[in-house]
Length: 251
Ligand code: BGC
Image 1 (tube, helix red, strand yellow):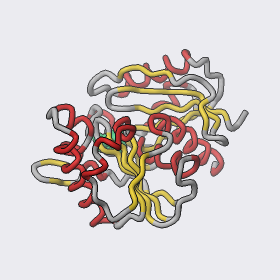
Image 2 (cartoon, rainbow, N blue to C red):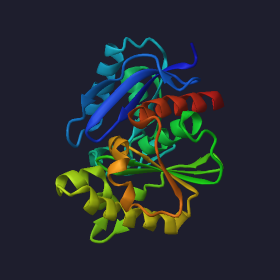
Image 3 (cartoon, rainbow, N blue to C red):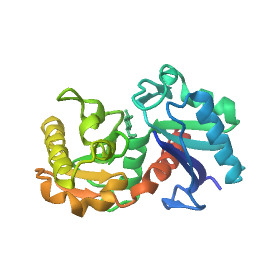
């Protein structure tokens, strides 16, 4: 079935996969997850993906991968939370050769955004929409009238003595053992910084911590309407499948 695709969400700490119905935006299998070894290189990720294909007994010939880097025309262009050995590598060619399955790669936050806009609470949202994933890093997906502007990487914008994700990712809250109030205020500053750049109409917060929005929503004062992602942890996997399907249609 052409709408049934194997899809992977490679994260800095965990790599998840499922077989996805990309037409309905639903998982057709359980979501299998393995820890991503720290600073994993291409061989480590290829090994994980092959294991996930075996676990899910995937017999199809194409797959989608969401990857935590700038991905331009299949080539990895940044490595904040993955090995620098990925930089310059054509991930689509590499994983296709490794797995024998035609592979399409997209930035992980862009994948999550595609899934949310297609199947989430704000289906086909118009205007400027910014989806942020708050996890180990900060991922960003920017849409204008439903069209993705890929690889915005707002988590890597210069901020204070570093970059925004070093202060406002969920990992920063945990590492610094911050209260919801302290972290919420920092996140508020970062969201207002993003607002000054793109003036979004809507901000969608994703990542595991968006499930606990009630703990820090009181500290967030954005001009844009702010809502949690609906697909939460599944959006990355669903969106990777969706991206692959979109690319296949254009071949
Ligand atoms: C990476 C982004 C990614 C985000 C979320 C950041 O460290 O630079 O490409 O989208 O983490 O995984």
